[in-house]
Image (cartoon, rainbow, N blue to C red; front, side, top):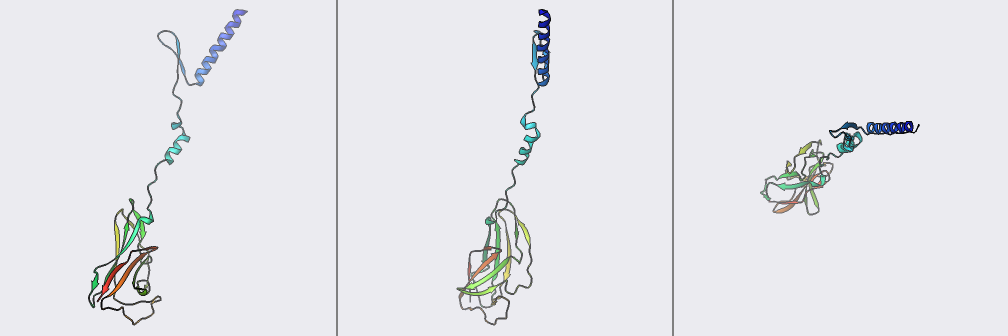
Length: 193
């Protein structure tokens, strides 16, 4: 009876060991020395599980976006002084100071060529603008787009009412400011003779 009990215990322990090996994914094998060793297969790591791969996919760096504060507007004239009868050529230049391309609306709906003399508002390209359009362009990093406006040395008022007065000449100084949307250029000073 005692031997039978020992046999039942041995079978129970052996069965438990076999079940444990099967659950662990291991295989029992015998080496040359006859002792039993348990080989285990590597359990799947967290990196291979679907839950772990989702964060890895979202960890892909997003490309840097265009920072609008690095897009600048400047104003320039083709000369510093103009003889009597010579019309200034006004240039608005928009430059992308980003390291990535930027989409910028450089249409006439966004730009203004403004000329003043002291507190006197002389001319605005928006006063008599018949049609305004949008023109979105992609400007490469470090590159610029320009728009030129030949000013006919005339005065304008808001609403485009007729005005007979002409800007003074005789060496008077004028200030040209370019605006694109909410960005305003530094002043460009020129002289009319």
